[in-house]
Image 1 (cartoon, helix red, strand yellow):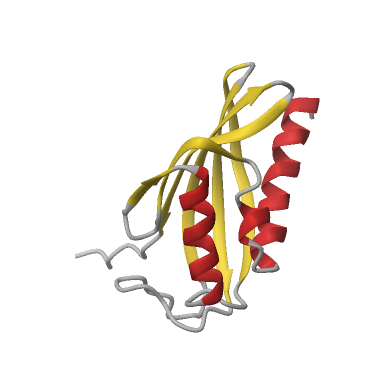
Image 2 (cartoon, rainbow, N blue to C red; image 1 turned 90 degrees about the vertical axis):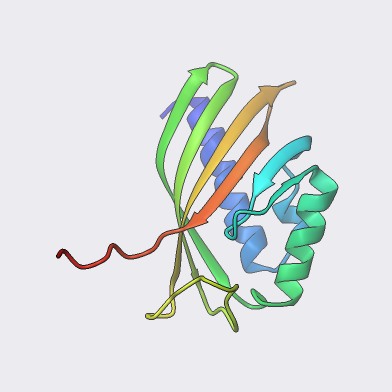
Length: 140
């Protein structure tokens, strides 16, 4: 594993740890000031302050006490300073769920795609796109 891949894996691990402590500031620590994010409902936001505020709201509300597991499926280096990180995410312990999100077994499954940019020897999140994974319909 390269030093860059190890640094990215550490960043993702720190995100999961911050989520699991309900720490919005820690969760947003690597988010760029001008970063964009799309939440599980498809609503798009811009900026680190908004990213932190929205996560503080959900950590105090619907996702209070939830536990996140983030498994990196792939890290793709577009350039040495730009990486696309494909993550399988699972949330357990959710008190309520957003409208349209289904978790019949109690696990909210998501696909999280992050675009990371390295500047001044630090990886930051430029884009964060999260969707919930729905079960496929039965074959006809």
